[in-house]
Length: 261
Image (cartoon, rainbow, N blue to C red):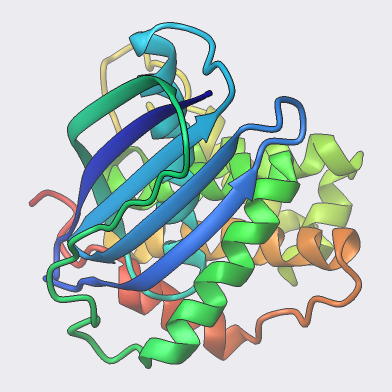
């Protein structure tokens, strides 16, 4: 007998972009439970199934959010854009017997933007597979997504995204600067901005706080994006590192133009 947890999300984009058609399967290495993730247009259906789904509704709900973040992070890294998930509904089936099939209705499954559909799908599959395999990359990618989703707090998440990669690979800040292709002095300036009298990571005595600007948070986001690419080349020798132009295209596709919408 098999249990099913079916989760429905709406995926929205500030610029009106839609998600290319995706159908991704994933097996949890520690439990053997399976996921089928069908996405397209403005919808995502995430089905988790297997013998005896353990936990409560709260557990299943949390797991669905953890998984949809892998999708939105993959879309971001693939250059499709910045998508925000909103839970729309859930169904939970216990002790289902026999063969079970299901279908999902997707509205407008083709993206209405300048991303080529086939390439966008391939890149998203590629990144999603990688994020499911390497936890530090996934954590850093999720923080990159949070940085652009909250541009007025971008450096908090960029800094933590860099730390996920630094700590997991046992890198020095000099190593990380080399990954980013910048001088260590530039990285020290970034650390100073995040930590000293800016109200970014720590409060200031007078209550002042640095305001967001597209020039700042766009540059910070590029840093964590470059670090993710460098980290992946260490973990996966077959990966061809994205070019500066490819990173630039992905950032331009995703970055909010107005930090205070």
